[in-house]
Amino acid sequence: MTVHWIDRALKPAPPLSQQRLADIQQRLGVTHPQDYLDVVQTHQGAAPSRTLLTLPDGSSTTFSLLLHFEEQPVGLDLLGILAFSLKYSRSG
Image (cartoon, helix red, strand yellow):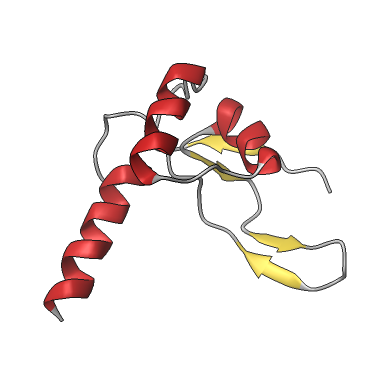
């Protein structure tokens, strides 16, 4: 499956540096899957040109955009979304 990406949150989307990636994975205590990293290192903050994607098994899914790993703009960044989610999941 070929996906064509359109810059959305970051224009233009800067390449994700190995140092920034390492810092975020350490802060989160996770290691992202390599196939995800292959995409986000080039297309962070981007959206697919088609939001309905057909998967290899024939099923479909929707996809809005890749969260980005940069500090700005706030709101579509991975750490900001996680912090927001944690804050409101604990208050409810």
